[in-house]
Length: 355
Image 1 (cartoon, helix red, strand yellow):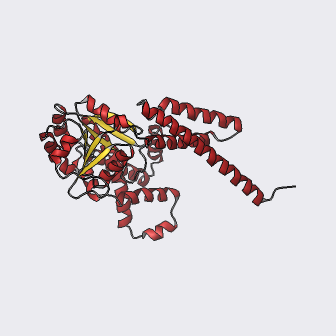
Image 2: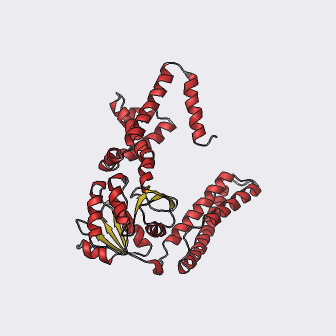
């Protein structure tokens, strides 16, 4: 007798429940592994092991006639969940007293949550008292007691804050999280000659729930010990270490160009005679995706975005290249130069690694 659709749905639901139960069992085993890592002071992530797990899933997918791409995605999601849970296991031997200067700001609050979840002892120094974490009203006392001092203030205020912190002769690790480093470059390098100073740039915003697989840049200002200690604090992220002077060259493209492209997109729409409602009714997939990204940009911190454009010494050069690129597209279309247009498309495909 043939099963009806409802019976098949019930059978699928039963299988789904079994899958979830097995996922919970897997996560529980991963937590046990995390406790062992914590007690033995082992790194949170083991990339070579993760790659083996993914390869195992892909191999099994072939045997079962399943999509290799889907199997890889499932493996990565399970690994992400396991590492996320392991990251919440306190490591008493590595617990630090952390002072977050500017801890009431959006990224400051994110840092508070992140470090507290990892078992560190948090104090906040800011113009107002923290609602959730202990506040420190005396910066000097907070600096002298802290093992880690994080400067999470506007780019324009970073230099003055670093100088004041240096004046108290701190013994702990010091780092800022500014998006642009050039304005503070000399002060950071000067500090690294005497103290454990580096510079960190989380490549994500305060809405990020998990650091796992998120990019984070650590800039060497002259203290290799500082870089090593900062790297340990952010275990689980995709960490790239670079020299301080190289940071803003990279950010001119990663932040400056991407922000400017999205701002130009919604500014062009804003100058048109078409309302967003009208355009959204006929929106293509590409348009929808671009709107989503641009909406995130326009909803963010305008002052920060301005500073990223204004303070990066390499920004104008990159924006000039952007203008040249738009002109090239315009001219190819206006002149009917199919060869030039397809050449740009082909070279772009090559830049991203081909097919």
